[in-house]
Image (cartoon, rainbow, N blue to C red; front, side, top):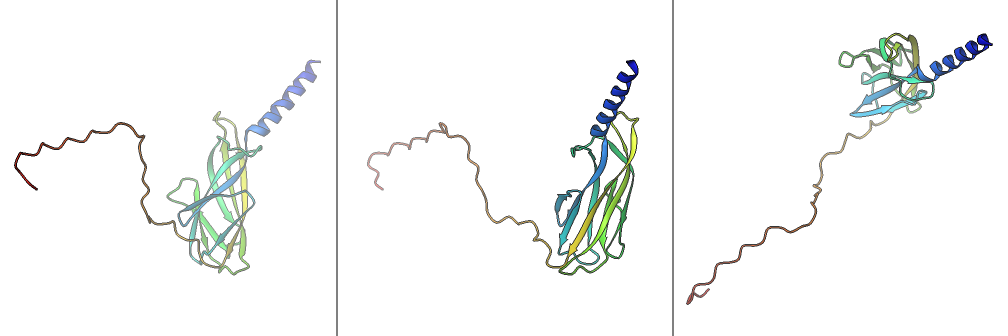
Amino acid sequence: MIEEFIEEAEALIKTWRHKHRARHLVFSFSWCEISVRGKGNHMTFSGMTTGQVVAVVGSPIKADGTQSLAKLSNQAYQSSDPTVFTVAPDPATPGGAIITLVGTPSAEGISATLTETATATEPDGVTTEVITGSELITFLGGPPPPPPGVAASIVFSFGTPGPGPQPTPAPPLAKGKKF
């Protein structure tokens, strides 16, 4: 009887760990002052030209799809086809990388898969495991997205109406003066 209880408890713990620990990675991309979080399967960029770069960083995700609090270390990024894009560590973003478009995108697009492997250390500081994430990236030829808008007008914000300062009465007119 006790052995059955222990087996059930171990199964519950294993299920809990599976749901509450980091299981895979998703990517956030930054290009042309726009940041986009990948969906974990396919990302498309339009208008990039050979030699342009896009920043990327992986984040740990739990099995249920929510953000994990695990801290990542030993991140390693890889391109499935270095004739499409290369990937190198981003010196400005710890754990991030820079993707450089090497190929020439056509209207149909060129694609390769980005893969990251990292060690995830759970908040307890003890539990660690190696997790991975991958995303198919397609580069389409064509014009880049428009730059962020520039200031074109002014919008006013008004306070709550209330009693304001009272006007100062005009001084009395002197007798005999005409205007």
